[in-house]
Image (cartoon, rainbow, N blue to C red; front, side, top):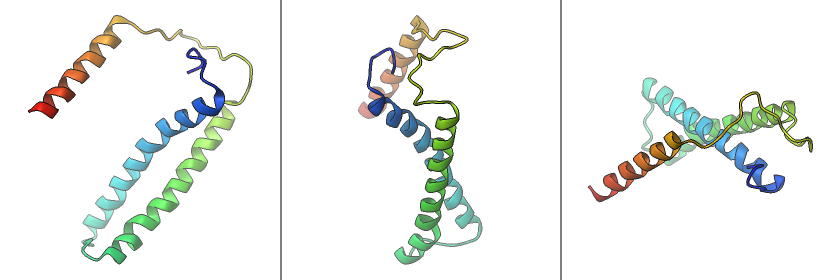
Length: 111
């Protein structure tokens, strides 16, 4: 995102979002699996709130706190240009991968 000259006020929330949602989805799956193992059904909306939503809120707070700590540890707000051991460049295999994914998504939508 630095190479695209996006401002930090845009790039940092996007980077955090890309890290937050996979963790949130995994925790949601784990909570629902734990409830299923314990034999708890979700027929009552109040019990759904109690058994799923409340733990998800607590877990999302913990996840966001962990991500913020990791970002601070990596000095994400440091104005100095970032360096890398390995240069990251877009290659032909990346375009082939994106094209194949697009074909699968479009094919699945049309199927």
